[in-house]
Structure formats: C-alpha cells, structure tokens
Amino acid sequence: MFIGEYSYTIDPKGRVAIPSKLRKQLLPNAVLTRGLDNCLFIFSSKDWQQMAEKIKSLPLSQANSRAFARLMLAGAMDVKLDNQGRILIPDYLRKYAGLGKKIVLAGVYNRLEVWDQKEWEKYKQKTEKESGSIAEKLGDLGI
Image (tube, rainbow, N blue to C red; front, side, top):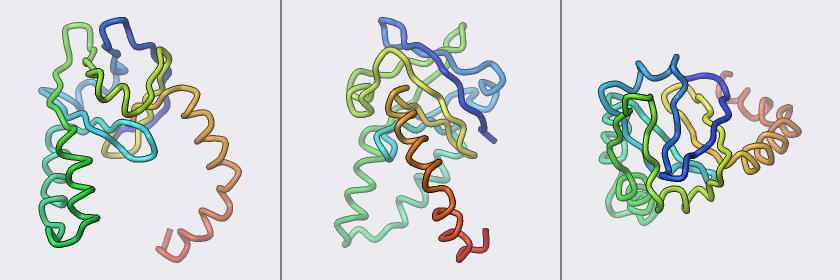
C-alpha cells in the first residue's frame, strides 16, 4: 500500500527519485500514466493490470468510456527504476500534469500520484476546507 506525502525535485533530464521505502512495491517495473485532477499516476505492474482489466470491461459504445480508456491507456508507459531509484517522466506527461521543478509524490493506496508542488498545495487546501462535507457524502457509501 502506498501512503504518505513526499517532496522531490525533477532533475534536468526529467527524472525523479521514488522514496526508498516505496521502491520495492514498484519492482521489477511500474506503469506511469495520465491521472485525474491534473496529476500523474504510478501503478505497480500488478495494480496496473487490474486497472487495465477494469478499463477493458467498460462499454465501448459509450463516449465517456472510450475517452477514459484513451486518457489512461494511450498515455501510459512502462517505467523502471534506475540504480538510484529514479524514474524518467517523459516530457508529454510533465506537460499534461503541469509539473515544474518541485513536485509531490502522494501515496494513495494502490498508486502514487505525481503533482506539481503548487497545484498539490492548492488542491490540498481546497479539499481540507471541504473535508466535513466530503465525509458526510461518503457516509452514504458506508465510510
């Protein structure tokens, strides 16, 4: 399980280090893709396979299903950690997420999310202010 919030810097080549305590979960390789809310998702190979199976089962006849599949699958790429525990984030994904030099890796159960640090702070402040109403709505789901 991925949890926690980690601040890092992207190097000039587009590489970012993965926290050492999370690296084992991403071995031997992982998948990096466009995420939601203007961030990127990093899945272990196993969790990515499960996500891809769910996407595959969406009805092809529905435009939203096709759009979601394209968003998640067409932008995805396999990534391997180098000897220093870094992954390369390609330019097209850095542009998609609006990543600057400073980023945040957020552990969200079955994935890591990669956020531009300023966008993460904005998102977090907004969500924290709305936490009461969010929790109330989730009560209907048994949480």
